[in-house]
Image 1 (spheres, helix red, strand yellow):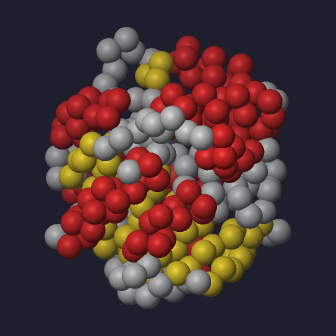
Image 2: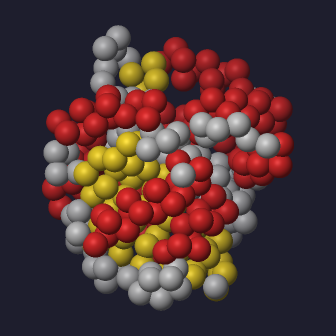
Length: 272
């Protein structure tokens, strides 16, 4: 395993974990989370692949920056990491989880898919916000997301409460022990609340439907979605990007809770 820091801007370094050999799989964690959430994927896929996991700016061990805490910049940062690691060789699989998918879609917007072998998106709709009563697969309605922003992401205590509730209510299906819950919440708290609020707003106002469509048309693409909205997500993606393979599994953090099943799905997809 090789840990390194890659400069993506003046005074801003991203922490990158680089493990194994073979065709590279690059993993991008979600909103305020870190490389650690993908430990079970690193252990599994590094037996056959080079697995690269990064902490986005202001996450984990990367530089906490007052600038660039949005998904346009995160897409730029991802491109710089791939370039620094000499990964633009048309054999890279990109895997984003939650808001990490936004960084991947932004990369597509900026760079296209010519250098990508395959893409995996884990439980994120391409458009986050609904302003219509019957809008298809989205994160939520305007009033609900505004309430989360204004109620929770104004203090460290609020961020902790938000992540705790989201973890037990959406991310994980089984009951967590105290150590597990503390570990998950502490991942998020490495990102200061005022930056978490900025990232939340950037993610909520994103619209990457065209990039999701383009990905499905251009390269083999897998989307793994949680059971609580599985059929809605499948129907939506079948219309938006019918070539995208959709699998339904567990909760929002299914790759951690149901890691063996998730890894087997990805193995099967990569063999195609």
